[in-house]
Length: 60
Image 1 (cartoon, one colour):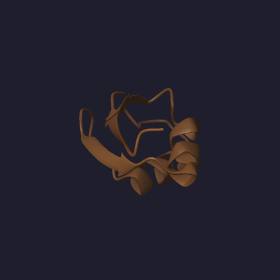
Image 2 (cartoon, rainbow, N blue to C red):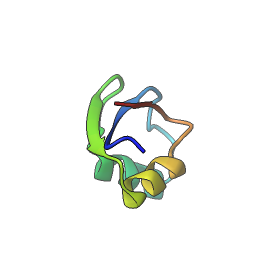
Image 3 (cartoon, rainbow, N blue to C red):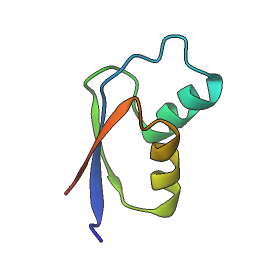
């Protein structure tokens, strides 16, 4: 399993639930096309799963 993953916000957070916005904030994503490199942990994977329709994921 890869140690890090790159997460990119590709869709807007307008009209999304507060839980989804909170997950994106927890991942460190605020703007469209913003990318973050995060550790590949179970917590991060769970947060990504909740907003998988809004983000793009790459393994590094």
